[in-house]
Structures are given as structure tokens and as C-alpha cells.
Image 1 (spheres, rainbow, N blue to C red):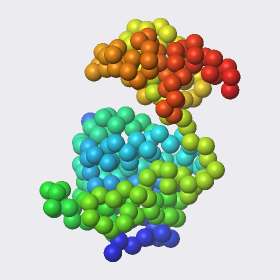
Image 2: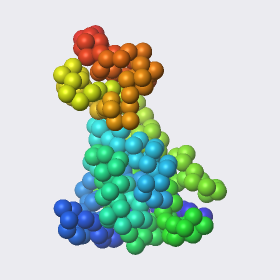
Image 3: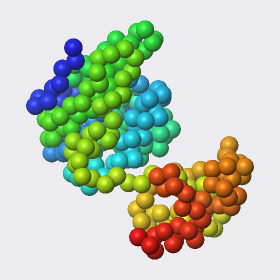
Image 4: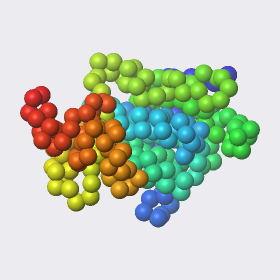
Length: 244
């Protein structure tokens, strides 16, 4: 049975990372001493739940966590540095550190190294998250030991409810644009002025005007959505900000 290590120190490990095409050793002291850190660990880079939900969830809530006393957010997986670096690029996860535990030393020290040979993975991490303060684990959320790949308690929202239950989550913003569009540039500028992160969906990169019309009921860009609600054009976005 997987046990919580709350109240204990994190394992003393040196991670082998690749930075600017050079090998760089990063120790647990470098990562945790004098800091409040969220760690979440998962079975593998580029795997479905990890890529679609686990990493994006923490990346999207990073500013809220940092506003509530968290210094860093680290994702650990039993993968090598090259794979983790490529995954970081693919995920555009600029708000979190994707850290390779290539030999599984940290994961084994946490008691979370499990056998996934049935999937051809070998030894990998069980999915969990934890809050670490100055190297000491304050709280762990460990997924239930059931078949498959459960994802119920190690998500970003569960961690946020533990750290700051009254915190306001940022709006989820998507922006349809077209290259060279000055109105799109204006909309992006307004979002940045209001410190709002957004997903940019560029027409012509697998997205057509027909797709835009289907979801927004309009053929012009930009079209801005917030929390699933259509705001509209850059003029509509300006009016939205003026009203709040």
C-alpha cells in the first residue's frame, strides 16, 4: 500500500537535467530549501491524462498558487531529460518545471515507484501531488490504488482548495486570430494589460473560417471566449473590460 510521507523530508537526490544543451545537476536542496513548492508526479511524459489535464491544470493555476505563497511548481516523471524537455515545449508549460527523474531515485525514495510492465513502461511513478515547505512534506494527495490510471485527487484544483479554498480561479480564455490581423494584436494586447493568460487559435493552422462560424457565429477575427462564453470582437472585448 502506498503511504503518505507527510511530516518527512523529501528524498536527497541529484537530478540530471539538460539546460542549453549542457548537463546540469540539480539537487533537492536547490529545489526545496527555503521555499514553498508544489510537486506533482505522474506516470509518463506525452501520455494522455498527463498531457491533456494534469500538466495544463497546474500551468493554468500557477499565478493563483504563487499569489497564495507558492514559490515553484514542479512536475516529476520517471523519464529522461531529453523527453521531459521536449514535453515541456509541447505543453508550453512556462509556469512549471518539468523535472526528469530518469533513474527513478526520487520516486523510489518517496515510496511511489510502481511496476507498469504490463504497459511496457517498466518502473514508473504512481500519480500523486504534495505541498513541500523548506524540504518537509506538509500534505500529500495520493491517487487511489485501483486498476488503470486514476486521476481524482492529485489535480491542481484539489491542491488549490487545500492551500487557499477562497482563491478566485483565473478565467479560461481562448482567442481566435489570423496572422497579420491588427485587431487581433489589439485584443492580445488588452488581455496582456489585464494579466489574463489565453490560448491563441490561429485560422489556417487546421482551423478554417467555417470552424470559426460554427463555434462563434461570426467569420471575422478576433473572437474571444471566456469560460466558454463568447465575448466577441476586439471592440466587444474593450467594452467588456470597461464594464468591469
